[in-house]
Image (cartoon, rainbow, N blue to C red; front, side):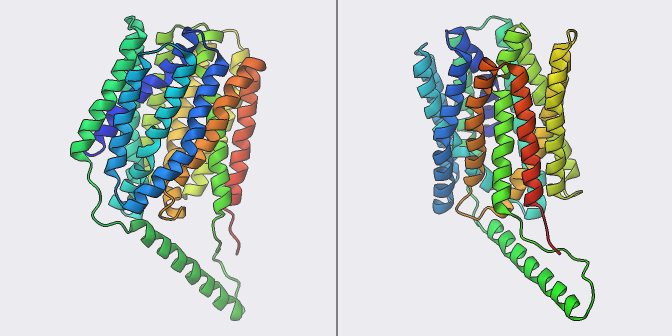
Amino acid sequence: MWRLGFFFHEMAFGLLSVFLPLYIVAIGGSLVDVGIMASAALFFAIPAAFFWGYVCDKTRRYKRYILLSFLSAAALLYAFTLTSSVSLLIILYTAMSVLHVAHEAPKNVLIAELYTREDWEKSYAFYEGFTEAGWLIGLLLGFFSSTFGFDARSTLLLCGGLNLLGFFVSLILVKDPMLIFERRLVSIEKTVDFAYKGVIIASKLLDGLLPNEKVGRENLYAFCSGLVLFSLASSTLFTPLPIFFSGDLALPASIVFFIYVLNSGGGVIGYFLAVRRSGQLDEKVRIRRIILFRSALVFLLILFVQTVAYTAILTTIVLILMGFGYALYFVYALSLSMELIPAGKAGLFNVLISIGGACGSFLGPFLAQILGFNYLFLTTGVIFLLAYMTFRVFSWQFA
């Protein structure tokens, strides 16, 4: 039940994710303005994410930062209704991003400490699936609000109200864990397992036998680089995509929202599939397969954009599959990050995602406006391939 506040919070940001780029363009902004807003928000969120992760682990208090995130988002979204200046909206959105990430690391730690390592994947998948359903409902709200002609002020007040509701629900339901030790226990287990495998291999070699076991330390730097590259590719692609549908394909705002509803629906299916398939295959293998899958989908976009008929339908199908693949990737990557990243640095996962997201948020709109969407899709597909190769380095083992 403690997840319910996050559900309302995601509803608000699901609606905002598509509404805000369209709103910026509608009041006289450009694609570059959208990119500057998104990248500035993510760049400033990078030190903030590390800070919130450090301070919540240091104080061993998590609820207070979740409440701060939700309440500040409600207040700043109200401030959005008081101006139509693109520059001021960029500043307000950046401030909201800095405070918004205050709930990310505490949420990740809560799940890691409330459940055992064997249940992390399932627990993260359930949380993400549940909140993704909230995101999907937020997109549906955007679809209906644009269909029935809600003005910008009403839409922004709705987003703020949903965050305020999330604050009050979390105030009642979220509790800090009494004992905090699961991540440290997992770290000790990995060290012991590494030493044990080393002893077994050494014993077999001394006896003149050929060992079957493989032993190796995961390459943390490659893992971190892979997270950044995957986030870079995803952000480069998705930041200007609402403008692609509304501008290049000339679709009305209600249809753009509906396409993103379907994309989010694919994500919900992916998260709940991850719940059912947890523990059936090595997470490292699954991550690599999903990244290759996403890369292939991006290259298909280039082909589909060249077709005269059914471009909107074909690209929508690609987006549904991308949502499905991202859900699986995020669950596996998050589970691995809580295992690999030491306590006290819980915000590092969000920092790495923000670095890639910040760069991609500017790169995507810039490429789309200067070179066009075909070059954007090509660049994104190549970056996904680089992420795949980086994760191969991460999971390399030696005998």
